[in-house]
Length: 237
Image (cartoon, rainbow, N blue to C red; front, side):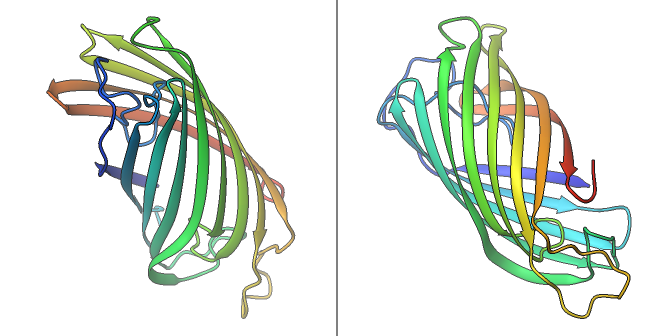
């Protein structure tokens, strides 16, 4: 499945900084750097993600996330986000995954909170290292669009380093996410269709690397690649 993500910075740093890039500036779509906000600084982001194509049938979905970040201390940043999604899918039926056609506009789908602590600064220590923990709750499945209560706890190791007189930024993330999921019943499913409503546990491992280059003051161009694998109670990997 193909994903396209764009972000809009809707807030600005309240505190000034002399770092090569604004502290904790999100330069990529999915990966996060090791830097944290200055104490008392605030940022707001609006993320829009398009998910498209499952190699069969028709599938288009949009995810919207409004995120607020606050610098608690120079090394500690907290964030909170509200999430929404829309979906338009037809001609895809897969046991335990896609129970049939679904279409609706933007709906509230979940919320999440994250805490990030920076152990080493990429600007001061040569390489940046930070840890992040998060908790997320959602009530819509982002694949099928159906009702599904999920609660996830994630832990991530965030790495960041500057090159070429701080014009080039390289970021790497490694993480794990544990999820408790509970699908809601669906009426009028085929007799032989598998759609378990027993609570499930899911474990996801993920890693990624990306880079961003400053082409003009406050303008960056970047690319990233991700690998994610998920293990579920009923389905397996």
